[in-house]
Amino acid sequence: MKLEKEITVKVNCDYKTLDAKLTSKGFVIKEEYEVNDDYLIDSKLNLKKMSNLEILSKCILIRDIVEIEKELLYKYKKYDANGNILKQGKVKCPVLDTKKALEFMNMIGYKSLFKIYDKCIVYCSNKTELIVQLVNNKYIFIEMEDEPQYISKKYEDIKDMISELEEYDLPYEKGNYFVKKAEIILDEDVNK
View 1 (tube, rainbow, N blue to C red):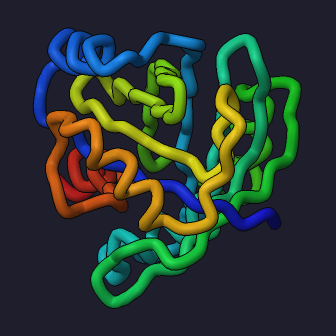
View 2 (tube, rainbow, N blue to C red):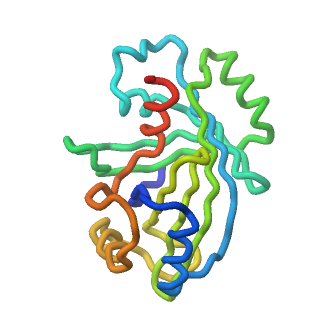
């Protein structure tokens, strides 16, 4: 499993406003793609006795990066006492057909818990790459990864990513740089 670093913040304006703000700061769109995640969990687990983070740690995803790749995915995350991510990584297993993958997972006792539909828009300036994520037609997030795709830079420390993001004065909820999209959707769809 390859460990990685990233930060995620929740945007507190609409996409049109965010796009205008990014454009005014010298960002251009480099790529757009869609990611459909089906979160699956062992049907034998008693979810009522588990915290959200415990539930998410047991999930297997069927991920469809539309017209790019399909995979089974396990995300590993280790948190501190405040819920900040200390370590994270993923293990991927390519699949050819997400419906067959779901059928397979159902046959071994896993059930669908919730789904995330994510339109990703990669923005770049001359020094920064941001991934704007439009999630379930309801939420907007900005993510930064330690190894950007379109700029030649590698972040060694989370603090460097946070500092660079703060330079742009974008409209996001300050203070939480480890927003957990899946936890928000879990609360909304499952823990109503």
